Image (tube, rainbow, N blue to C red; front, top):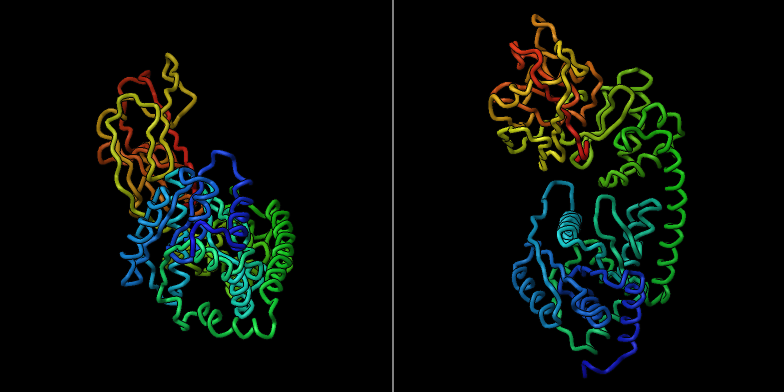
Length: 482
């Protein structure tokens, strides 16, 4: 066919892209998730025509699942270059963990990579090429899985996931696969046919090849009907989310990182489960099944009655739901340690030869040490008993190290007071486990300062000059939960 000839499908696709483009600022750049299949090829071609190639970036994720993955990467790069569109790719490793489907693992890895690629380029809009057939298949899959309203709502036309920098937009969601194929043929596009799309061992492929053709014969309007079902479910889910936000205002603690156990248990089961689902989404965590959340709520009610919060443990997606001093929270890792100890993460050691710096930024810890000089009276009195003599900071290299377990410090000023483990001090001060993954500040080989606990008195030694300038050390944590 003549690629310059305009077809009805051509007009529909360009119109859909134009509508999506009109919602953006005039200078906004657009990232297009580009697998090289027919759907994303149509979207990229149309976006370049309507928005202009300079505003578009084609993002390709190399999963390595197919023997042809390298060829697909080369094809996608050439396709983008033909249209003058910037191209970027990222390779990912797909998890093969037991109990997780390859489809789900590949999807999660793909979206993480796409979000990262958008973030590095400062792009806030990611266009995806899903269409009406994809939406119908998604609703059917969710129905067959017994999903709730959030699942039945299927794919939103526009959505900003928690923690993502770019909104996911689906300009073609109301168009049929057949219409996209008509556009591709009219434009004489070349695209990739992924051999895995024919494998009916995958649930979506089974629906696509064996179920929806039969539905189309007996229920020609099934796609529109399922799209309406998704819209109704999305509206109902919106109301449930509004209710959950009201409950979060009462139950949330520590900026939503934890929930009050009493506030949660004051709700009836349906409302409490709704809050737990919403809380998981706000934290950017993987949705949990109704069975998993129901079990968690049962355990919370049981331990609440028994007054044994430490007994709670519900594992989900590499996290453990724990209860500590009236709060519930998700703890990283699947360790078997009791709930009042953190999963210790190891980070690269950072060092600083301190020469009066006021701040020491530690990106791997997502925080900053601040060194503030404190005025000292003539008699040596000062308002900050935890301040450190300036000579202590300069007597050896400073280093920020991860906790390894077993570290001790003397928090009291009394010379003969015993040192105690950090774990014991954290417990005594009621510091929940998710806040304990902090950088330990050493001077030479001596532990000097621990965020949330203070200065290790044993590292100060005796000072000959009580009027020596002092420094107050403060740790500013950008994000307490990763």
